[in-house]
Length: 208
Length: 232
View (cartoon, each protein chain N blue to C red):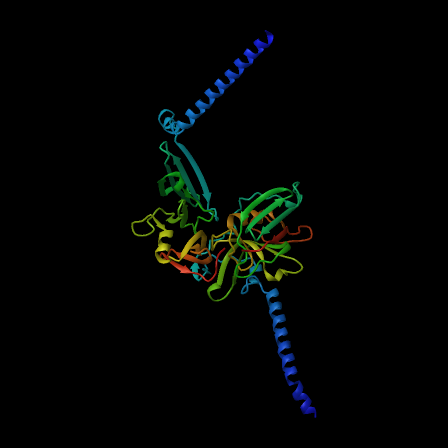
């Protein structure tokens, strides 16, 4: 009698365990199937606050400050606005703005300022090919009606055999250092991008 | 008989002559390389304080305006006597491989930044001491496309050791003519951003006050600088 009761109890426990395991498993499957849902759910019922970030970069001679204000919008886009204040002036002027998907955000390189603080260069991230642009710090157009000059496209228009590996800084007041490789991966030459005439000068030295 | 013998050894004499000339040339070349100034045209001039606000500078074949220097202007830097610092000895490390500089006071990091070391001529390796600090001076050298003429080079900290004489003019200093730090760009000196050079100038020994230039002494020896690695 005792044995029979414990057998029944064991059967009950095992059946219960299997049932519970089955329920948990099917539940987890349902959650996995429904996993894409939370994104839209979050964007409709739980709106993400717009986030603003500010980054200040002081020029090497301490006479100019570049401020980047980034605003991450609720729709996921990122608006970045760049301001300059020169010679410790309290007022800053807007010199460039860029709105994009966050994976195409604009970065401030370490050597962004030209030595005389008249220009800055910026890097726009791109999963396929980074872009580098130059902007004047007085807010005026840099070329014709354009506020910025994009170095990368200008380079590839002229030099198809090279790949830009990095744009590192300023070799002079108006000379930007562009490092390249050959398309097969071999180390290529460095170039100046000369802002006085928006042309490239191939160098005999490489600026590693 | 003697003539015959001389004829026999003629080629040997010519060979020895060529070998001696080559060896002499090699020794002379090495000597001049080892005694060459970092700023070949202005080595001695670089050791004298000079402010030339009206002069133009030349770098990479381009004429530029150097920043004005006003020696009467007060520095905003706090002046702390380094030798009396409770934090410990001050040391500067320059890593040519990563093109970075770190300055420590004991174990406390005072400054970490990117530099530009020798590209057209190598920056010497080893342990050095700052032997004098010059608030501003003129530096010139190079030739052809590499010619440079740079008045108003700010915050110069000349260093030397028993192998690299002070007369050769190697220094850490501020740089206004390029902004490509993290990459070799100099003729042997260690280029710093002006903001970093200023901080280091007022921090490192020998102690200096407002816009002062000062040599190291027994009582105020120069800060130790260790330069290592290999420029890319």
